[in-house]
Image (cartoon, rainbow, N blue to C red; front, side, top):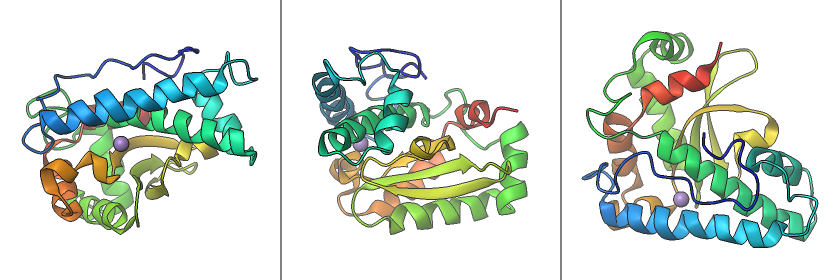
Length: 211
Ligand code: MN3
């Protein structure tokens, strides 16, 4: 993750593929707004918010973790923008173009872990889709590794992220409307089904499993 060790001022991390590489599931037009406007704005705003505060000098992950425990209104704004910056970088890496590295069906350690926790790939997809589609309003659907090593699915609201609670995410799908509206309008279930079948980067998920 390019942003894990970076310090302020943060810059927009490079996309791991071309803007049109995920089409037709995610069009170049969606990526150009989502990456070039939404993601870029979270980073620009974060840099403005932390300038001259105790958060300046921390890595992005450290800012998310520290701001998560602070109920102060200024810290909530910092949390929202820092978590959105981290979540989006993680999201771009959770996807890979058709025939790209990590595309297709899961293999190896990640396949074994999915089968152990969910039974089979279809059961995982069904559970992930339920969480993604069922997240009311804006948010994220995650595959995470629990402290007991089992894989779990978690849905979070708005900017919230498992890393705010010391969790270990493996994959994330953005379920804010800006992630799919130009391509799927209100059909979030269809977008998530295509996302799971065609875009997941299983080698990224496996790398995040660790030992
Ligand atoms: Mn988004």
